Image (tube, rainbow, N blue to C red; front, side, top):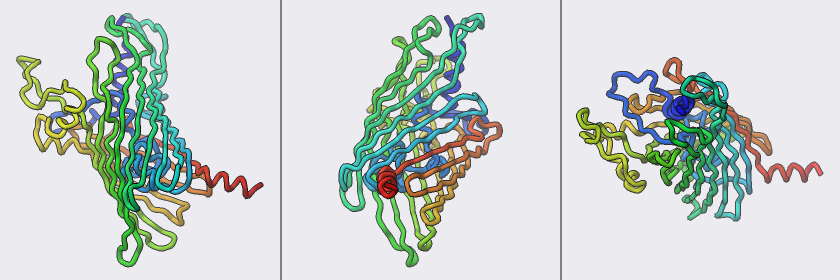
Length: 392
C-alpha cells in the first residue's frame, strides 16, 4: 500500500540537513547536495552550537568526537562524560529530538580512547493507506555509535581515528509503492589531525590551533532491496582558532571552520534524454571515486564548487574559566541550501561539571530552524572523585 507517511519522512529528513528550500532567490538555480542520515551533520552540542557550528580547531572538550577526534589527545583530565539535548525543527514538527552521549578516558599521557552515541527521533508519524485511513503510528529513529582513539605525536600535533556504526529506521518495515522497506545500515570512519602551539601577541600569551577532519567516510545506505543506495554525508572540515589571554581572568577565542561534503553534486540532465548528462559528472559512482570527484564535478564548474563550502565563524569569551559567552554565524550559499543564521550561547563551569546553552537565530523568515535550543551538561570524572574524597 502507498504510505503518505513516507513522503512526510522524506521531507523531514531533507529539512534536517537542508532546511531551506525557503528563501532561495536569484543567485542561480538550486542544486543542493542531498544525502541520507543528515542528522550526522548537525551540531549536537551547545558550545559549538553557540559558535556558529565551529568546532574542528577549538580547544578540546568532551564533545570532540563529532568535530575532531584528534583533539582528545590534548584534553585536560583523565576522563569525562557529556550529555547534550536539542528539540529540533520545533516550528515544523513538535516532537523531533536529537541527543548525544559522549565520553573519553585517558590511557596515558599520549593516548586517549573515546566513544559517543548520537540519537535522533523524528517523532510520532501516522502511517495511512491510499484512502487516508490510519493504519498505525510509528516513531522513526536514527542513531550512530562511535569508538575512537587519539594519540599525541609531539607537543604540538595529534591524530585521531574513529569508527562509526549508523542505523536509520524511517518506516518500521512498512511497504511503500508495493515495495517492502527496511532500516538503513552503514559503517564509516573518521580520520583527523589537530595542531596547536603557544604564541605571544603584544606581550600577551595566546594559542593558535588548526584542525582537519575527514568524517563519515563509509558505505552507501539503502532502505529497500530494490532501491539504489545513497551516499551518507561524507565530509571534510578544515578550520583554525586563535585564543588570547587578555589578563589573568579574561580570554577570548576566535574560530573559523570551512566545511565541504565529499559526495557527488547532482548533474544537469538533457530535457530530451533523461539519461544524458549535459553538465557535471555521473553521480552513480563508488565511494572512493565520489570523494575525489566531489572536488570537480559541479555542473557550474569552479564557481559552483566554491559555493558548496559552508563557513562557520565563532567567538568565545571566558571569565576566570568559570563563565563563558559565545556568538557565531553560519553561512551556506543560496543555491546549496541557503542556511544562514546567527547563534548565541553561554556556559558555566564549576568544579566537576560544565553547563552550556545555545540559541539559533535564522536570517530567513519563517525558517524551520527558528528558536532552536541546545542544552549540554558535562562531568569531569576525576574532579567528581576528588570531590567525593574531600567530603569523605
